[in-house]
Amino acid sequence: MNFRVGNGIDCHKLVPNKKLILGGVLVDSNLGLEGHSDGDAVIHAIVDSMLGALSLGDIGTFFPSEDEQWENANSSIFLKFAHKKINEFDFIVNNIDITIILQSPSLKKYIYDIRNNISNLLNINIDCISVKATTTDKLGFIGENKGLVALVSTLLVNNGN
Image (tube, rainbow, N blue to C red; front, side):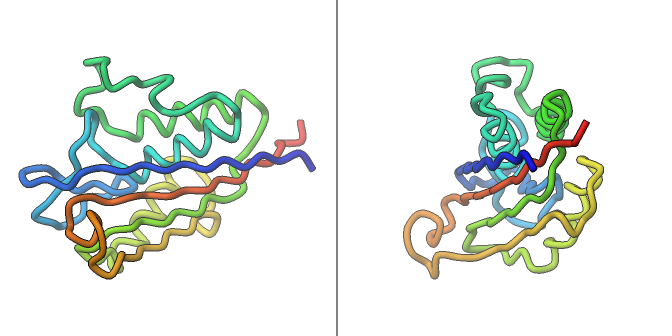
C-alpha cells in the first residue's frame, strides 16, 4: 500500500473583537483569532499537513497572507483546495489527527461539531477524524490566553486506481 504522512502546525494570537473559529465551527468566546483570513488555525494546520504529505509546500505557497483576495476568507476554501490536490495525486484521506492547545474556553462541547464539519467538508467518515483539546496548565503564552496552537497529522493512502 502506498501511503504518505503529513504534519501541520499553526499558531494564532487571541484578540478581542474577533470570532473564534476552529475547524469551521464558531466557538463561544470573548477572544478570537487574529489572522489574514478567518484565522482558523485548525483548518490551516490540516491544509499544511495535507500539502506536506504531497510535498507541495504549505498553505502560504498557494494562499499568501500578502494577497488581499484572501483577507477574511473562509478557511474551508483552503481545505477544499488541498483536498482537490489529494484527489489529483490519486490519494484519499485515511485519517486526520488534530490536537488543539488552548487554555480557554473549554472545547469539550465543540469536539463533535468540529469533527462533523471537517468530515462533511472532506466527504469522509467522521470516525476518520480525531480532535483532542488540551491546555498548558497556565504556562506560557497559551496559558496566559494570548494564543493557541493546532497540531495535525494526516495519513493519505493511494486510491488504488
